Length: 255
Ligand SMILES: [Zn+2]
Image (cartoon, rainbow, N blue to C red; front, side):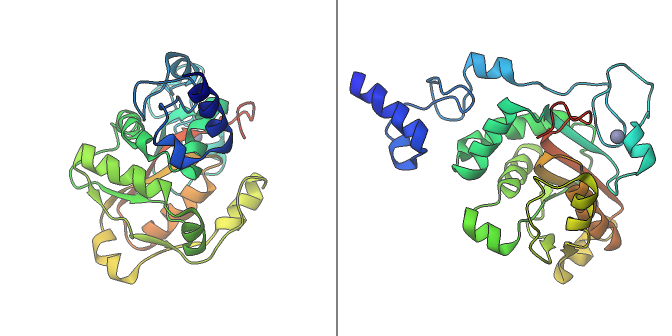
């Protein structure tokens, strides 16, 4: 078993998938052994910070104290996002970053059922009769490089769990945009402005529809706002956003 232990550590370091299949599964946050793929260890769970009410009625940012029904945060009042409401499952911090990076770049798709459960809970107020789920699309080039769109996998699993309709190709990226990571809030807005469009042959389905945009991370909300704007321009009645993790507004927890 000793050599297997050593091999397990090496695999963690290299991120090799082939060996992952024959070695015991590990927690994506702590690296500890877990019973089966897709589980977190107890220590991993304790590091996840779930977002609970009260939150901003518009963008879902957590409030330190209850400000009454329908209260919005200062940022939403100053510059209202184009989506109607956004909700997130967890705070985007070091622990959730590790989880999501694993999901995005290492094909840890076994986490999809866990994430879908989190999304279902966080977005409970958003689901209605006839809700349509649309994942934030990647540009074709990035999709080829990464092989799959993590937002599409989340949306797919969530549709199975909730019975909501899934429209995988409702939105397209009309141009490739540089990664948002190192940009300021203003630059992020400019970077993604006009980067999304509704496919011509999907317009009839979008018209009058109640949409929930699905993504993994929301930082400033610029990407989701740009996507929502395209859907509303195409006649969507309502566009909400549901994400796994969101950065905190004060910047303390932001990446
Ligand atoms: Zn807000």
